[in-house]
Image (tube, rainbow, N blue to C red; front, side, top):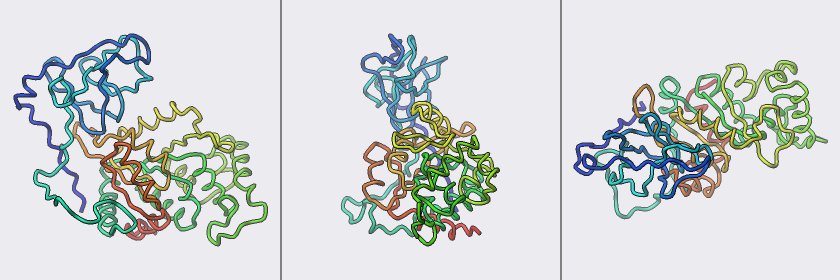
Amino acid sequence: MYTPKNYQEPDFSQELLVSAPNAVLVPASADGILPDEFHATSIFPEYIKIDGAWRLIKASRMDCSVVVRDGEPFAVEARNIKKGDLVVLGRKDNGSLGIYLHASGFMSSAKDREEFAFRTSRTRETSYSMDYDSLYDLLKYERDNGYIVWVLGPAVAFDYDSRRAFQLLIENGYVQHIFAGNALATHDLEASYLKTALGQDIYTQESIPNGHYHHLQTINEVRACGSIKNFIREKNIGEGIMYAMEKHNIGYILGGSIRDDGPLPEVIGNVYECQARMRAVISGATTVIGLATQLHTIATGNMTPSYTVKDGVIRQVNFYTVDIAEFAVNKLRDRGSLAVKSIVTNVQDFLVHLKHGLSLE
């Protein structure tokens, strides 16, 4: 049975924090321009001392500046800074400059750790049995008490069993939002419509004559229908990931890329608009799972803090990344998202494991 970790707030009675000055605030001189010595945020909870009180940045993300508005601190991307915004300055986060980073809020008070041990990294040799069992319990808890966001690569749609497993996750309440690109939605709809993905039968792997036209044909027909929802209705689509998303009114954000075909009408071509919409969703997420999409998962990870505030309660955000390549899953940790848990396997096997472990039929 999954039990969320209780958050331990900093001890604000410490002399260093009691005697710390208020954070230094300097107005931005122009839109999109930060003053020298601006403070940059991390994935961890950070407190800013304002008018003698320590205030938590409630919706943070990595590599943002901090702007104080009406006595509250906000994490703001540099491009969204407006002239006159009061920006927090300081490159020390130990409290001495009115900035305190609290990295140990979800750690156990006593944590055994050996100085030397084998197999501490996450590789194809790692034992994942306990990870799966923990994930089953986590997903059952989060379905009723949290908000689960999935970041999907097109490999999820290339296999008959993985598509079916993810459709069952949607239908059983384990998906609250999806981040993906044009390819995931295109090949899932191609599979529903023409039973292929990139022209290959999703079950037999047989390459269909002229199958390389199938995804282009699918995109063209979706565009002719005006939307994915209309395409599903007009073509009598009755299975698949996008079908289940539309049927159950689950939100999804499809981010565009330079190499997109088409793309589908719902794909957001402006990357900053897409990022803003993703961040608005991720700020309320309690669990994030990235499947076989290195760049999209890293992008999501970089805007996902290690915590979120739900009904006034500070909750830990659980982050998983799953890929068959060790390099892909470990790269996210190299980009500062240290709270991520990685599983090295192909996503088809991963999703079928979830289907069986959660008893989905």
